[in-house]
Length: 494
Image (cartoon, rainbow, N blue to C red):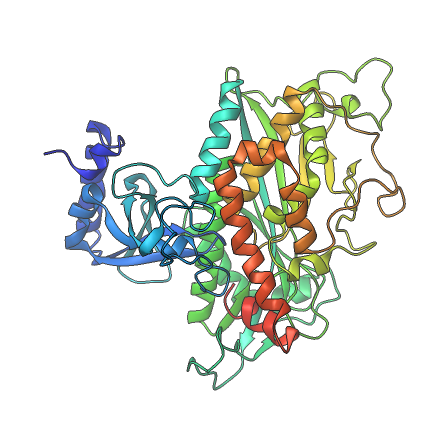
């Protein structure tokens, strides 16, 4: 009889050998438990902890997981009526395959093995969800990125991404209790800043925050992430982590691992790390997630965004002065679909507080040459193999798989339709240009009106994601104290 992994079409002699190697490594290193984890709609990891003796069977038979974990909004409310009589017959009510809270099966990926540097004798494996009939869960965020990368590969291209992640680290106040309250979600802990801020890249503040930053460093490096720097950002307790470029799927995996790891490791040491855009604390500054991206020629490995010489007759404000024709079309696609990209790049109500004039955050769908006020900052130039596009639209709570997948589809549309970008802006807060959505509701409306992006991502995925986010909006609009709602919804959990 074939195994579940074989019926899914993912198990062969190579995977069997990789599974045996994982089991050998765990025995050799005296690991006694393994967290089998999967990333939900909001970019947070869910996991089942297996005793190491149960892993051999799980690698081929999978692990059952309640399907409603894919149907949770940001506070863990199930946003779909899975038990309604018509739930199984109407995919607009509940995504196909999820009625009656049916189980999914998680298949661990043996190639993803990590030893957790903050948790003794504990290993970690990423898993992919499948339906019980061995068919893929198409609304799984990671699969959505894999599908986008396949479309990109079909035209001979790949994508490399580098991450710049701003976030906050606070010290937990003495006597903090984890006791639950009547609120759902519970109140976040009381905290104090690890540095006072308002002194960008201060060496003195870096030293003041050294203990916490050392934990971040050891966590990231212990997980094998390509961390290149840790920096003091402008706001109180705000810091930034910068990572070397890698292929897009690995970069998304690394973003998920980084957020999950530093939250856990810092909590054990008495700190509270948060990736919410703007913490609900006096003087808090909004954080961004800046995604650097460059197309790769899969045949040669060369940077497909670089051009050898500026286009004849072009000026520095022309996209083809700095980017290849492919890169210029990709840039134009990102701009053309900027509104519909926004709910994937900025998925929380808090995130829209970042879009303010002269705050190094975008207000309009504009691009600029090394311009931090524009939505797209183009770096490099003719002959520079480091030429790339930095998208400054994102917040650090974004689901990286959906965020990057949506950008690939938008850029591909620009390539396929050979779109032309407008001239580069030199006044990002005064040039006009198509305004970005000013709220999560406006962003979801923009997505609903973008037939190209809906077709590329698939209507089932867009409908599912939009319902999750609109459920969030409904609960916020109905809250008697909206500030308290934001505090509980995001700050204590993400």
